[in-house]
Image 1 (cartoon, rainbow, N blue to C red):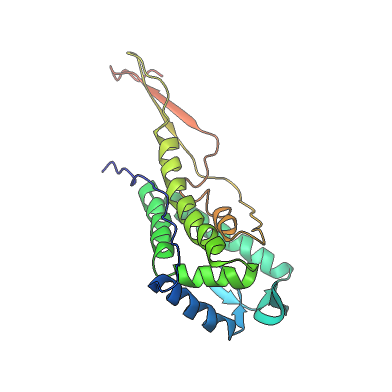
Image 2: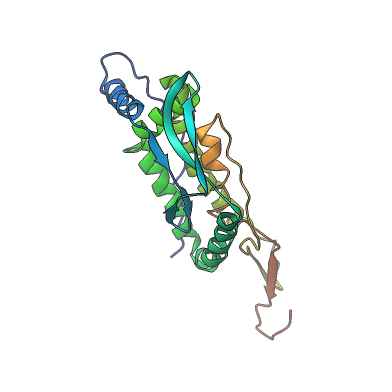
Length: 221
């Protein structure tokens, strides 16, 4: 079928006023995460792995508080990541647009729901943000990115060349023939989540090909 993606909208910002369930829930999550030092593995090809060494991750507002241990990669890890991307590329490129779009829209729905408190609490700990700052960054802005990126990709696919009485011209967007290298920022969760996923709905437009066929079907182009 010809699928049309849902019309995007900006995620409403929660107020977290005293006495509200939203405030209580995020306070509980923040307290639980403060008491635990999380192990942060590398994820390559869907697998979690250790690096050559680990380094501590401290809360900027409380330098004595270790909130996690992250892995330090080596040359082999970089090569494995490239190999994993090459292996996954054909299947993702062959996935219809509505399938790729559904993945991003599902991620937005999960962040708007069950993952909202954990991501906000992690942002408060790791970036020293208030709940309001975390809410508009880690939750609302990233949700908006994922919703609107799918919408913009749909608009790009809808851009087609002019047709006259002699031909039907079509533009078929090819997947990216290469890599997207994204370095996440240290102070905005939304940007860190947006940079590596923005090309995903469209698989990144590359050089285009245009086909023209005459209505008479005489084989000319």
